[in-house]
Image 1 (cartoon, rainbow, N blue to C red):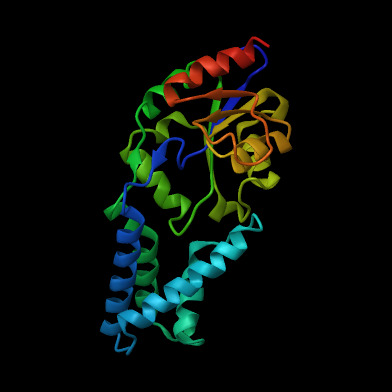
Image 2: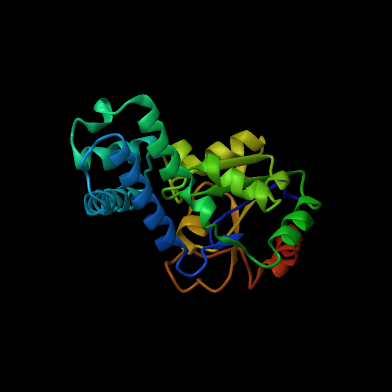
Length: 248
C-alpha cells in the first residue's frame, strides 16, 4: 500500500471483548483457588483475607496504570501475598508460589473473553494489504504470555509479526515506549505505520504521539480530544478505512 508499511492493532475491545460477568468469575476463581493453595500449605488465611488482599492490590494497580506504567504479574502476586503477610513471598515454598502464580495468571482461560465478529476476517484482509502487522495491548492481571495462548486458540496469533504487551514493556498505552518498541520489532518507521484501536486516548492519542496515523474502531470518539485520521464503525469497515488513508 502506498505510504503504509505496517499496521498495528489493539486487542481489548477492538478484537476481543469481555463477556458479561466474565471478569467477576475470573476474580472469584483466582481468590478461591489461591486461598485453597495457601490452606493446603498449612497457612491460615481465609477466603475473605485473600479477597481483601486481591482488592487492595487491584487498587494499587489502578493507580499505577493511571500513570501509564505497568508491572509484571509476578510483581502483582508478590504484592498480593505481602498484603496477607509481609514475609509471605519469601516464606512460601517454590512450588507453592509457582502454583499461586499459575492460578493468578491463567484463570482467564477458564472464563475467556469472546472474539469480536469480523475480527479474523479483518486481520486476514489487512494482512494481505501490508507487509507487516503487529499488536499493541495493555494488560490487566492476565499476562501477555497467556493472552498469546488465547489468541492462538482464537486462531488470530498467526496474523502478527510482533505482539507487544504492557506487562512486558512496563509501559502502558498511550505511553510512547510501547508503540516505539513494537515499531522497532516490525522494522518500520512511525510515519509509515497505522494503528487501529477503539480508545481515543490510549490508541489514537498514543499512536499519533509517536507519529503514527490512527484508525478508530467503534463510537468512542467523544472521549478525549484526540482526533483519528479515519474511523471504522466496525471491524468490517477497517480495510476500507485503511485504503482511504493510503489514498491520501
